[in-house]
Length: 92
Image (cartoon, rainbow, N blue to C red; front, top):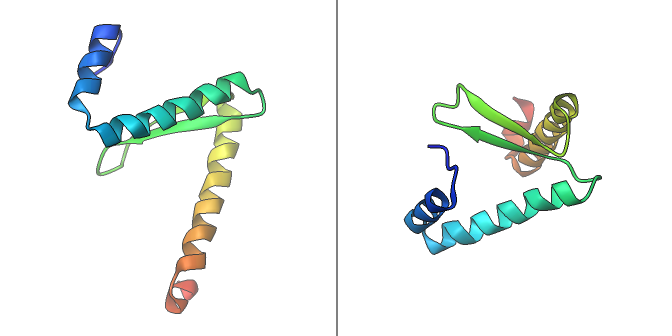
């Protein structure tokens, strides 16, 4: 479903819980900041289970830099997961 007008946006927002709307407000605010600050870059990644296909949208960056950003995020996530992993998981 692609929302292309105010009525569609309002209808979608009415279907969301207050917590979802609050979270969406944070997400949209962060994306807007990327457009206002040339040093901020982002990506929006959308996947539908079973996660074999994704939509990737670059925010205030080009596709090549978005690939680099995605690589950096992957390394960050891997390190974060391994820091919290039980000792036996560190050897896998």
